[in-house]
Length: 221
Length: 311
Image (cartoon, rainbow over the protein chains, first blue to last red):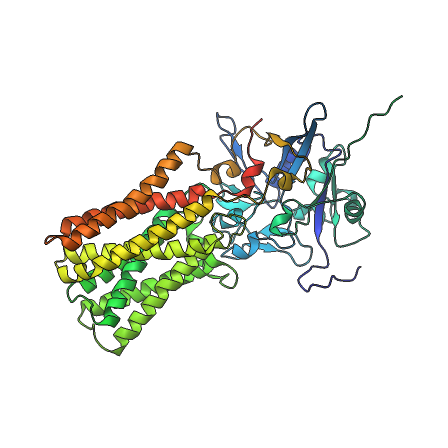
């Protein structure tokens, strides 16, 4: 293991996702696999309201959005997966009046204890990313758990001990690992490919990072 | 943000009740507490605080677990408020009970008054800090939030005190309240206008570029990733038109400040000021609901950047 960082508050281990925007094709496989795993697992059920009616609405831990950048003829379409960033300084945690929201010291995952949540929604106000979704049926706040009930499950084969979204991604756009370990796949990707944080202006120090798109020039053949 | 009726009711009703208790406590310390009306004012204050507490429960998904909200007082302003509110209700209840049964003098009456003043201030501070401490809701993250919560509570408390004293037949106390109510309302108008002006010129720190990290002068959302609504599209958007927002902004200033100030001036000059006090209190009560609605609706949450376009 590596030497701890100088600030005392910094955790020795911080699990996180690194999203490669070069290869995300916006297929939403991570969205559906996340929902499938988590609605059936320890974090579920993630309820759907009016699922077959006019205004369906459901609880999801992960969304894939689409943005367009630049102008014709150089327009780029960017598919952008968004889930809890497991901030190193999560503003959602200290505001929780009950302690239901917490950040695990052992691996840096930000979790909600559903049995302690009173459903006041204050934590969702205190997240600039809109990463938390209130479950209207269970009346508690929910969020990405990094599939905490999967990644440590020794009954699963080692290659399956990853978040459901990572396993589902057909293009390998989602990397998972310890960003505090400089030799991990995620740390190398961040270092070598210019990984960046969302909304750095609020100093939340998101653990999840994004790899910027590289414009590949036309190969003349 | 989407204004929630429970929080609008809680912050306005409780704010006014704190103002009433504070005014009564100051009058007690100054030796000017109305003989007949003091128990009425304190019971009214206690009842309003309880009403506010009840209203706040309607904001919770699991009201039966509400007791847990006292646990994180080391870090959470909401937790601190949840502790301060029942303590303050206890203070006003004890004061109301003692004055009702004739124990309105003695050193402990002064001690109770001092505690009540401190409690009202602490509670305003906790309530305002719940909003002020969210640094990325720029409309709230400013000391004016605290100033307005306290001054609006004080002004509405003074108006309510005067109106109730007048209704109870204590015209002298009502008359004594009038200039203070007028001054506090005017001051609150000034600071509320300051915050409105500040909010009108806020430049959001977060942009689509910082939210996505896409380095391009032109970034537009093409899809938020789902067609139905979600918690994110319900909780953080008020859904009111710009026109309604403009009307609410003018409307609450008329109802909370202009009408009550005119009525208070009228009450000062009139021999039979009950109508003036009643109109002032009613107008301010309705106006404060609109003011608090506007306070929430005007707050722009940066998460909204991610939820602009369905497809």
